[in-house]
Length: 307
Image (cartoon, rainbow, N blue to C red; front, side, top):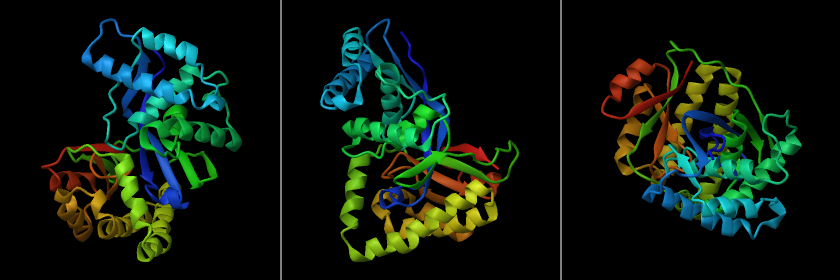
């Protein structure tokens, strides 16, 4: 048995901000994918994944309102079911989200079909289901990662209660502007990073910065990108990058602090968190990808989108 494939995702804008009702924009990232599978031969890898799925199944038994067919799920688990995935864990690209989407797709008794034309009400219902399911992995989940993986389409978050499928500007294979990823070489823990953020939110000064600056420029970045106003996009990503460097240092690996500042000072690229930060991938925006590649030649850089 091999289930349907589900892709990784990238939250272009909205990390931490969507917790406080900022806008957000999440897109599928097809470089990585995963699917449920019964192994031909057991290995350490398949057994480890199978054990995680067993624990996930136990957790889902507490959530009877989700209507997951746990009898079939447990039967497949006894046959060695595992999640065969190329999505790196702890890198901010939705490894647990793809797993949740795959389990829902395979075992939901009352599945909302992704290929159908979905109303905002159905999309929000899916997000609510996925939030409850993915909380097994992170302690608290927005449900956005599995939603993006399940639908396989860009999702615009206007607020916590208002999200929809959206379109984004077409890619250009020879475009100078680009979005890229840098591999930090470190694994991160989403729950640990979110806990740090929630502690910082207890400070009046930090809360004021979030509401008056961070959310403002996050929203402007989302609007600029969707409308294809790339000049405005770079103005706003520069400001957002600076705000993150000044206020989210625990979420930025120390050895990348100077690289972050160099991008802002030179204007060659602007870095931001990919997901919760703390390691994994770092997201970058540049008006000239060739200049950025040359400046970042010592780093493992992967182009995600060109325009």
